[in-house]
Length: 320
Image 1: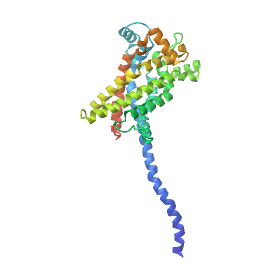
Image 2: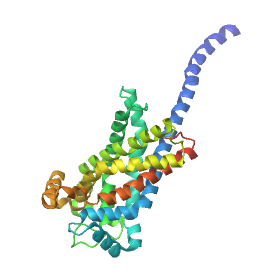
Image 3: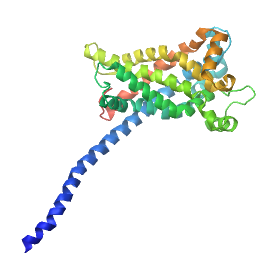
Image 4: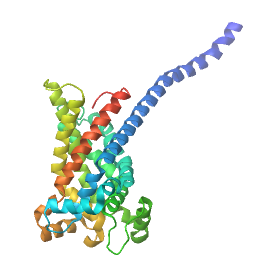
């Protein structure tokens, strides 16, 4: 009787425990994957914020030059800016806003890159293999577009803080919070997204050039035995990536900066900003601040990837 009783009692229990036992490793694996994804996003944000802290003075100069409408030479304008701002002013102007921007935009655009590559590869678009440059460009461009769409308000506040106000009649912003409040008060919530389209295009072009060019050039140098994994390789690849990104995104960056700081002047229309700037200041106006953009984007790219690679190594994550 005892034996007859044990059969029906143990049967359902064993059937229930089997799926539970199988689900435990699956749950653990999913938790580990989620942890890796969150770690990558965290490292991405940290590396971009570190780069922003180092390059903020150059970023301030770049924004000022893009907004300058005089015909002075580059050296005259830079000299005037350094004289007017002072060394401390260049280092601190808009720095909290810049760190906030990288904490949102930078975290997403670099952190989402690997995940988007995996998804593209999963649906039949090669992006993970070494020869799949087009897939990498699509993945990086998509990551840049997503990050900029979400982080557009932080970019606008950064630009305004670095430009010190958007109208001569207005007093300069005293704090980052003051800038947020004034934009919402004078232009509404939609004012925070002024120039968002230009920013998304600019960021998609920038990220679609910067990250793939770093990854492709790095792996090319390794595979051909020119360099080994290490700081020298990371430095060389990031320099190439910074140069490529500057060449492709400078005109888009110019339009983005003017729209975010002077959107009302162009009726919040990026095309109008483009046509009026070219008509009044010539086609080369699109490359105003391009040298400063390179001086900023080059070191920013270098610091970002050097810190990112070191942080990945520290946490036991394989190199890019």
